[in-house]
Image (tube, rainbow, N blue to C red):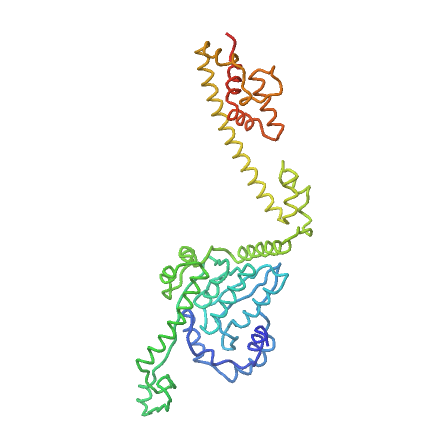
Length: 442
C-alpha cells in the first residue's frame, strides 16, 4: 500500500467520532478551545451519533478545481480526521488532495483557502511538510479569510505566497496541553483512587489522582519539543530568523497590517484578488512547463504579426527569439520595453562620449587658430606615415583619409559616432588633419 492509499484508508476507516483526537497537545487559539468545551458540556451523544450516521455518507472532498487551480479549504478546527463534534477540517484529507493536485498535469497552482482557529498538533507537522513539498513543484498560494491561527497558520506558512483579508486575525503561534488534577474533588467525596502502574508516567492524569511535579515537567518537555517544530516551520516557510519568530510567538493574534509588518504574511488582499493572483501563477507555471525545450504553439495570440504590433521597431531576430521562447505576450512586451531602455542608455552614453571628443577637437582647433604657423607646419606639410594612415590612395589628404576610415567602419556595421570614436583613437594624425582642414581659411 503506497502513501496515498494509506492516507485514503486512514480517512475512510469508520464513521464513528474519533475521541482520541481530542486528547494531547493543541495548537489552537484559546477562545476557540473554550467554545469547543462549552459545546461539549451540554451534548446529547446518542442523538448526535444517530444524526452522524445518517449524514456521514454525504460528505464531499475539500478540493475544487477552477481555472487550472486546485482550491483546498482548511476550515474549522483542524484534526487528522474530520470530527462529527465540530465544524472541522481533516489534515489527512488535505494532504491527499494536495498530493493529487501536484500530480495532476492540468493543475498549475494550489490555492489554500484558510479560515481556522487551529487544532491539534497531531497531523499539523505532516500537513506543513506536504505543503512545503508541493511548493517545490507548483505555486502554492494561501489566503487567510478572517482567522488563521496556531496550527492553521503553521500550515499556511509553508506556502509560496501568503495573503490575508484586512480584518483577519493571524498568528497565535504556540503549543499547549491541558491536564486536570481531580484528586481534591475525589478526596472531598471520600474516594481514594489507586493507579497500579509499571512506571511513574503510566496512568498519568487518571481522574482522582494527583499530578506530580515531574509529570508536569514531562508534559512541558513534550509541549516544548512540539513547539520547536512549530517555530522552526514558520522560520523556514516565511524565511524569517528564529529571533524574528520568537519575538511574535507569544500566543497572541495580530491584525493583517501587524502581520505584514512582522513578515507573517506577504500582503493584504480580498479573496477574489488572492485567487486571481493564483490563477495568474497557475497559467505561468503551465506555460513554462509546456514550452520547456520547444515553443508553445497552442497560444495563437503570440504570432509574428502580434509581436511586431506590440513591439514597434522590433527586428526579426527579436521576433524569432520570442516565438522560440514560448513566452506570453505580456512577458514579450516587458522584454521589448527593457531592450528599448537598454538601447537608449547605450546611445546616450555614446552621445556623451562624442560630445567629449568634439570638445577636445574644438579645443585643439582653437589652439591651432591662435598659432597659424605652427599649425601649418604640423598639418599638411609632412606626409602621413604608413603606420598612422593605411590608405588606398596617396592623393587623399588627411581629412579625406579620416572620413574614408569612418566610412569603412560604418560599412562594417558601426554607427557614425562609434566609428568616429574608433578612428580618433587609432589614427590621431588623421584626427588632427581633419581638425585642421575644418578651420576657416585666413
